[in-house]
Image (cartoon, rainbow, N blue to C red):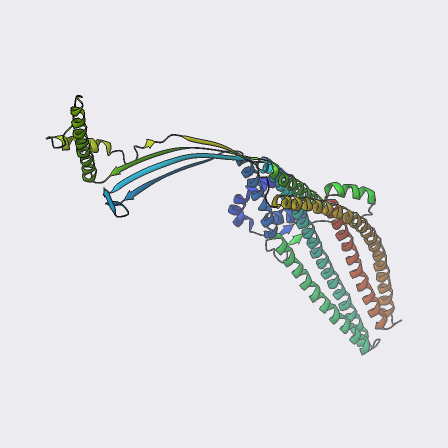
Length: 496
């Protein structure tokens, strides 16, 4: 089953819809073509669905790789509280600190560009393609398994039908042997042989029916849906003479085989990772910028007012001392403000109160910052060289794996075509053997009916016909299995 990238993407995006529709789809069909079986398996087989889900991660890996080309933006904010208490420097008391409330914000932008960053999208795309091809390969394997199991159900049912025909024939022989014995033309031994053969045919019928039921269960497991035991398989398979050449099929397989395509995609991804590993020798350019704002507010103004008054008194004393010096040298004294002047403390309190506002969002913006850094690793203890060599080894191993798969595929195509041709000739020969065995049984029954032979010849002829019928069924379905196997290895439908 060859899935295009567009189809695979659509299946992934439709995954949620499938989950919603699952109760409706859970009803098993009463009849089933091979195409219906493949469609159900592609939407219900849990192993395949788990592999298909990897497409989502691969797609987001590509988006993330492109996202690394864009700058990272960050915003942060916070509130702070500092309890009241005395500020000290060792044993020196610096003053009482009031309870403080603070608020800050920070806006940042950063961007880093390196060789690996620039090559990351190509690596991610190669990895995504590798995942797509792996899903293709998993889908082809699922198709092959479903087809083979579908054929197994048909073969098991054909074998059960043959067992029923054998039982009918042996039952007819029992009636004939009994009738001959009752009129004195036969013996009890003839009847006993016929009864034993009928019992053996009944055993084979029971076993064949059980095998057919089990094959339906195994098909249900592959489809991810429990089928009814009597589900009708309506696909028709024809026996025809294959006319393809090895060269024709080999050329098709080299371009279409899903497993080979997955190996090639893995090799391409390994080559991309090797290029990215070599890019670690290139410099890295980093850019960052930021804006910061801050505001703080005291919960109690008294300590701040006292600190301001203490500073004013100290300034007043210093001013008086300066004035004495200026007077001594005949200079005009300065104007000194006396903190003990009525109203001075209230004016200080008002000024402190005016400056103690803005919490929590009236920020004082700090100067903007920006930086540009270029770094070039000189020596890293051979770690870069190790990474490069490991990536190169992985690339070479992936290429060797591709070549190995190509050689293996050439052998498989040749072997599969030979198996198909052999299966076709075998099926024709088995058909002739079955016709001959039927004629032999007809003659044996006629001879027994007229008393020309014993039941031994009839029993042997019936056994020969049953063996020939079973061998013919096995040969016919061996042909169809070989054809399905050849289609899987060539990567799709083969021209008739």
